Length: 130
Image 1 (spheres, helix red, strand yellow):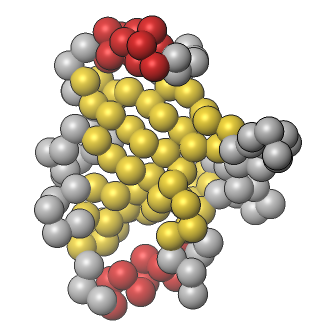
Image 2 (cartoon, one colour; image 1 turned 90 degrees about the horizontal axis):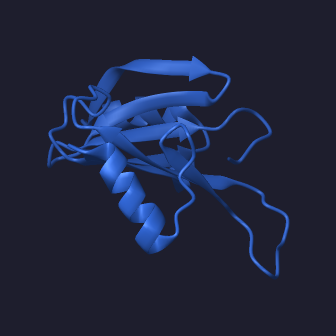
Image 3 (cartoon, helix red, strand yellow; image 1 turned 45 degrees about the vertical axis):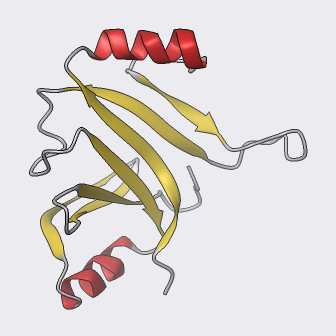
């Protein structure tokens, strides 16, 4: 069974998210959208048609989304079969969070790494890689 197949997103906490977004936009040229982040499309000169994306977003420090982690970041990893992977991780003694989410955006689950960082696992909707 494949486990992680790629990075779906990188999320950063900030005490001043507007300022941080503006800095990334001005100095690194990241095209910040109204929802607070951007979606990097996977394409280049050799492959001009996007076939997926990696999301980048800044959250306010007051966001509860990263809990129980105290880290100022969270990585979202793409997976092929979320629920099977969560079961395998549980059987291996990993700290798998009970909550999961299923929506039009895909299936989401979370595990806490040994350093206490919350890791998001994401199975894209059927037929999508982004």
